[in-house]
Amino acid sequence: MMKAFEKLTEDYPPLARCAEDIIAAFEIIRDSLASGGRVYTCGNGGSAADSRHIVGEMMKGFLKKRPVTFDPETANKLTPETASFLSGKLQGALPFHSLTAETELITALCNDVSADIIFAQQIYGYGRKGDCLICISTSGNAVNVCLAAELASAMGLNTVALTGQSGGKLAAFCDAVICVPAESTPKIQEYHLPVYHALCAALEDYFF
Image (cartoon, rainbow, N blue to C red; front, side, top):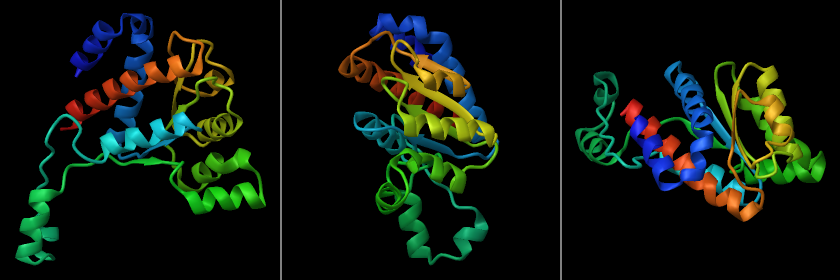
C-alpha cells in the first residue's frame, strides 16, 4: 500500500514534504474503517466536487476489481437469478458519504437556518464516535467546514483535512492536516487530486 505514496512523491516531488501527514491521514481513515466506522467528506465549490470524487472511488472498484461473495444467509433470501446477477456485478464498497450530496437538506438549512451549519448538522445527525470526517478547504478557513470539524472532534470522530500551505483555522480541529505546498486555489486543487487518489489507492490495497 505504501507504493501509492511512493509513486505520489515521485510524480509530484513538492508533495514529499507532506509525506508524513499523508501517511498519518491514511492511518486515521484506515483505522476508522477497520473498526466499523464510516467516513464523511465535505467541502465547498471545487472542494465539494473533490469530496464527491473521493466517494466515487471508494464505494466501487478504483484500481482493483472487488468481487462480492454473499454470505449464505443473504444468498438464501435472494432468488438464484438475482444472486447470480448481483454477485457478478456488485463491487466491494467502503462506506464513504459526501455531506455535499444532501441537496434538499442543504438548501433547507441555508434558507431556514444558516449556511454555516450545512455540514455540522449532518455530522450531528450521522456521526458516531470512531467515524471519520475528511474536510477539504483550499484556504482552511471555510466556516461551514471548520464548524463541522470542530463538532466532529468534540463528538469523538477522527478528523482529516486537505488544505493549502497555511492550513488555516481548520488545522486546529483535525488529527491529521495535509497542507499542500501552494497558495493559489487552482494550484492547491491540482495537488489535492493526486493526494486523495493516493489515499484511495492505499485504502483499496489495504482492504481488498
